[in-house]
Every structure is written in structure tokens, then in C-alpha cells.
Image (cartoon, rainbow, N blue to C red):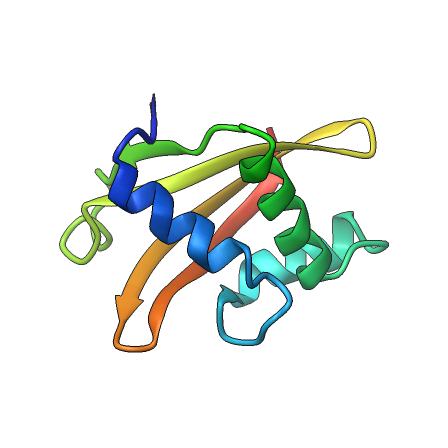
Length: 114
């Protein structure tokens, strides 16, 4: 794991995260959404997006991790990990950054206690 240092990628994350309350900017894969509903039922997906935005805005790091898993590395060179304090816990959030004509989209693909 290494902290994300690329200024262009950081700008893309910040650009997407600042719009955490807009649909289509932070998308959740079904398994990640299910874990959230079962384990942090008091938080919505949008609330977690807001926590991610606050984390980055306050100087928190995003780890850039080379993708090594079969079936994923062919499509994604990296995934990006957040570790955020939530109600006395540290939550690990694995994301992918996908760019399109509409701008960057962050996909939450995994979430669990760190």
C-alpha cells in the first residue's frame, strides 16, 4: 500500500467526492451496500460518501493499491482504499475510480471493518 500522490488522480477523487450528494458520482456495488445495511444500519450510502469527502478534505489519505487479483487486474490497474473512523471503528472502503465523458465516478466495491 502506498498513499495516492498523483495530483491528477487526487483532483479527480476530490472532484467526485465534493459532489457526494449527487446521484451517479459515488456508486455502490451490491455486496458493499449489503454489508453497510447489515453492519452500519444507521448510515446511508450518501452518509458514507460524505464521510469519504470529509476524510479527504481534512487531509486523510487514500491508498493506491496495485490490483493483483485474477479477473480484476485485467480491467483495473489499481484500486483505492480509504480507512475512515466511524463510531469508534475503523472502516475499510475499497473503491475504483472510473472516468467517463461525464467525469469521474467512484465505485465502492468492498467495505468492512479494518
